[in-house]
Image (tube, rainbow, N blue to C red; front, top):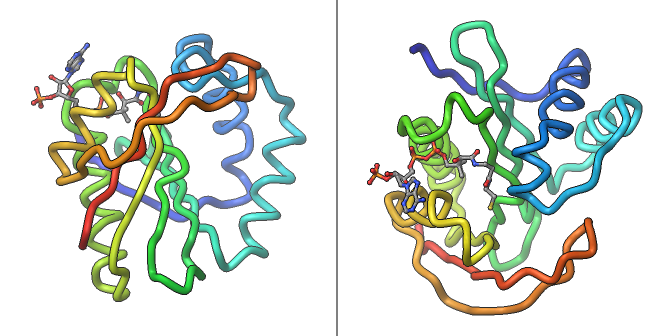
Amino acid sequence: MDIRLQKVREDDAAFLYRFMNDKTILDALDEIPTQLGDWVEAISAWDRDPDEEVTIIFDENKPIGWLGINGLLSEDKTAYIKMIGLFPQYQNKGIGTYALGQALGMLRSRGFAAVALYTDQSNRRAQNCYMKCGFKITEKLVEKMANGALAERYKMELVL
Ligand SMILES: CC(C)(COP(=O)(O)OP(=O)(O)OC[C@H]1O[C@@H](n2cnc3c(N)ncnc32)[C@H](O)[C@@H]1OP(=O)(O)O)[C@@H](O)C(=O)NCCC(=O)NCCS
């Protein structure tokens, strides 16, 4: 495997559409199905928004997942991991830990003070990945998700 991260580009819309309509991903994220056009618009909005940065995760030339960060303009220099996901066949191989580690290194080098994220309390794989990167649980909450589900969530934080 040769994992690399690359800033999202216009022609990644088809991948994001395919990825974000994968049944296991929809279930893991409590998301609802989307259209190709939604991703074309999202990429163009991210491109115009200096607060956000989205990266596609590749295995050689094959897109296998993505990672989104926001809060880049926050006054307290706290960034948020708003999304990280890999296709099921690429999960549990350390790729999430590696990709997140790359993102954290980038944030550290740009002078960010802390990074935070939200995850489902039931998503043990995600929590383990985040804990391996140094995140700690700092808050428990219940959140209404895109698909209407009420999810028990953790906020996790890392001081850089
Ligand atoms: C969350 C995600 C990005 C993590 O990336 P990953 O590459 O799978 O994670 P890693 O392999 O780096 O680490 C996972 C760890 O969880 C452990 N794990 C896996 N399944 C587990 C389970 N059911 N219970 C407890 N631990 C588990 C693994 O053993 C591994 O720890 P280890 O290296 O100490 O053995 C990825 O699994 C994913 O895309 N999931 C679907 C989408 C999703 O849930 N995104 C997060 C939303 S907050």
